Length: 625
Image (cartoon, rainbow, N blue to C red; front, side):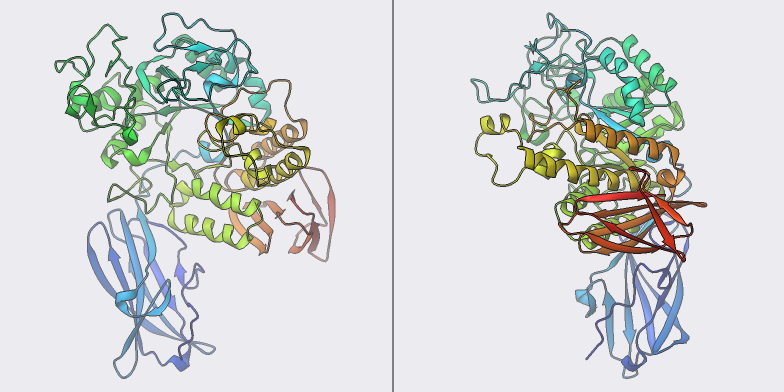
């Protein structure tokens, strides 16, 4: 009976180098089967998906290692970006063969292959994003400088006079939730809180859309060229960028380029704008931007939502307007002070379209950063039957790391540490190193329930009606559990490679279920002091410790609910130890100094004879330096 051990692994003794490789890189593979299995030959089987190219590379006998026979050889990565899928075939003296893939020994037709990502390493990735802390701002709900007057603005807007009121959440008389209630958060309000954000250690301000639109979320753009008047003016934006830059912060804008609003300058279904939109005349300069099945009332839209008509990204006038023209939207807002773009629903945008955005950004503002919204492993994502190329060197610099969020939430809620490590090692193996270190890591976003609610609310909670969810507040026990889990999760978030992202108000203890309950107004002067202090301290550590910004990652412990990993840059080492379980976890590490200090609490631990012994309490963690 065959030994089921998988001899190939992430260990560089088997594949060197680890993970994704640049164009043309030599990769050495070494297999170590038992002598008793009687294999006389080994062949590396590779399939380049983009080039549709199969290749066989013999691995030569390379002696022995104990009871193992060694087969070794070098594979040269293609000179063009590629996803290479590989496995191995063993041959016996009688000529019979068996293959080895991710699922163990099997016949060749049943192979599950490993992935080798081949990327263009000649294109630079700015390192400022991944090193720092990102703060996501939902502009209408963060801070207002005054109560606005909506007169003359696009859409039928309701303005809440009281900042602490509950948002509108019930369907209107037509059964629609129109998101037309505003609280009036504005750019001047953000400017007034830049010192607060600086104190949190924030280095990137990531804004949900700020362009004119008739909804409070503004993902249904009405005019890409204009700041929504409720948020302020173009000069306010310039001032915001100038003041942010003075504090060492960058500004990231949300680009919603797959669809517009139907109540927009371009579509103009409601006739708000004086010029002709595509829904008013087939002579409109914007008519070719949309695909009508029956003009003017049947057309392609995002997920079938009629208020979000989808654009035809291939239309030359649209490409020129958004990307390539001298005053294109992408280039113009970079020129006015922005430093980065986040692409909404990147899966909906063609690869060539994203590549053009990247090229325009590189030309307009070298060192600017392009982030994509992708919810899965972006190295092998298939969208609309196409394998995507986000991270291969010519499109996005980094992606929103939803796989991190999924794995972290499972771990924080008591899942095995090994599952988190496996999920993240898969991403680290598949992503180019610069992309892995430039991911946006998050626990909460505007598309998910508040992280404190997710970590604290105990089932069963009243989920039956929107009214119950709107008025639900966690009890003391739930909130305490959620806070402890969130503090532990923040240690994981700030210690991990990639930019830790705070969704506005998570650091202040905001609660809420799904949209719109996750989009309440920031509780100024009512923040949770313990959570806020914790996030501030972690932000300071992220800014001051180069190992947290760009250090190499090494896992030291992953048993049960206990997890420990190290970040190392030069001689500087930071060790993060976590316990998400209900019982204390004992861990022992090599430690080069006589004392280890928890940089968050100041607690010290003695190391004896180069060994550090710690006990991590339940739902707790440490950041040892």
